[in-house]
Image (cartoon, rainbow, N blue to C red):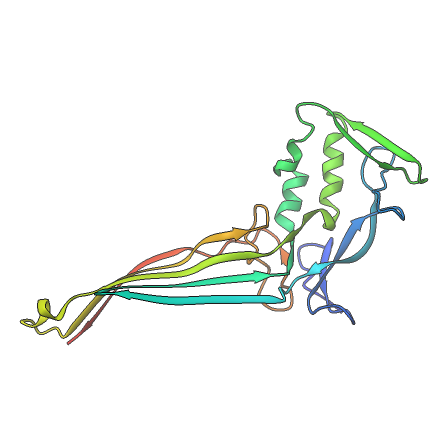
Length: 230
């Protein structure tokens, strides 16, 4: 069964017997028996069979939270982490196609030489110039294997810093307790392996996890709260 093949047909999410739930399945590089990439006569990698490229649902999800208090100050935080998953980065595929990915810088100020084997299995070398370079990167954009990214990340999900007013300041007022706090959510990645994209910015949180295409990162929010008891 194929799920989540909206917007791109280079990669889909499939549930395959014997594979983890939410397997990324897509186009790959054609290789010989030794794993060497096969090139056509124009120096472009040959598109191979569709195969399993990764796990769209990270098998490891970790959360760590803690709170500290000193006198009238308190600090709490929440760290989220996910490990072992991959994501098809459709954003990077389009960036490759349009010369916006930093990988396309290679060859702009000189020649780019690729080596491998030709379709007959013979050793092959091809030097790209201005007339063939765009076609080379366009072909890379069509091979899902090239843009499947490591989706591991560690993120500071929430941070709260508060101050409780001492009762000695409130005893002559009608206020029994008062506390002010700064709260931030989705503040930043402590560590992230994916290039250019937010690994959480997939199509949705359901069966199509592992596919990304111009996904918007989670919104960072900064807030201030006041808690008063009378």
